Image (cartoon, rainbow, N blue to C red; front, side):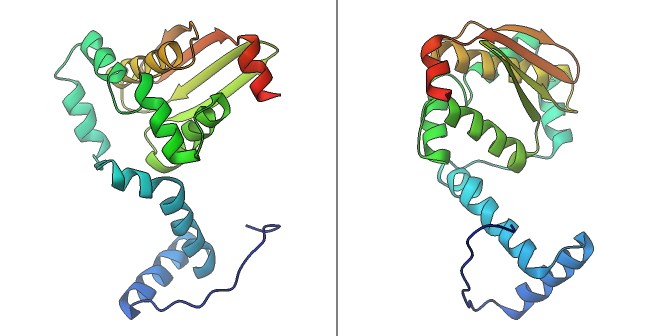
Length: 186
């Protein structure tokens, strides 16, 4: 957090909470202050919205086991109707970033990557060609869920026509950026 404007603020916290944060910071090799800032950033970037929308935490093995009960096609359909897909994505992006344009969608995707830890997302751009490459360790059904989620969002919200490559641990969405979206990102 160097080079950022900082504010000194004194707060009162429960002594048991102080001890837990101190122990966790030491285990991670961080200062108390840095860990506290990371926790506050996570709340501001993600948890405040997750709380409003009643998101629940699910262990990866539980999610993988649940998805094993349905077909790849059903998993893709589930992804396409999830809370972060299609027109729902615009509202969620707006709640997370304060805007719903293309750049805000990409920013929200990166914040979800950081805070949900259910995938990584790399965005590659070369002129008007764009790729979103997502990786994970939850199997082919999660790949199909992510494909449904991203496909629905790109098509319905941003009017893009992606092609997909899907494997056990990756999905890649490839598409051309229309000039109006390119102008937004300039």
